[in-house]
Length: 77
Image (cartoon, rainbow, N blue to C red; front, side, top):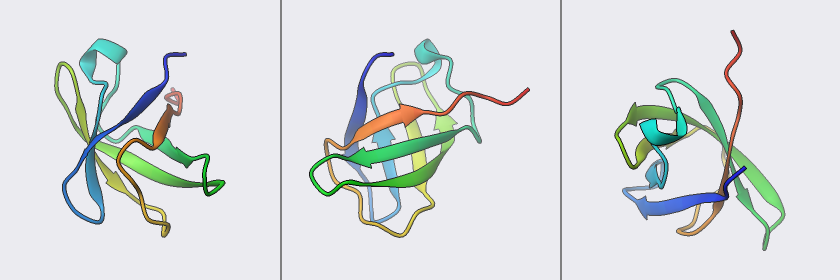
């Protein structure tokens, strides 16, 4: 899978990732935000999907940073 990352932080909870409808993301899909330097991960949810990027909202308690790695969780049918 292609490595994705956070491309812009809007505030403490919302951010953009560099993937959108071109990566088959859907609203309400869950993603994991990984920070290898600090060895923790946050859960986040996709709120809005655009062609090249997606707006997401953090659900975890840990802080997120620009450039953190993102892993997309598969959809449950």
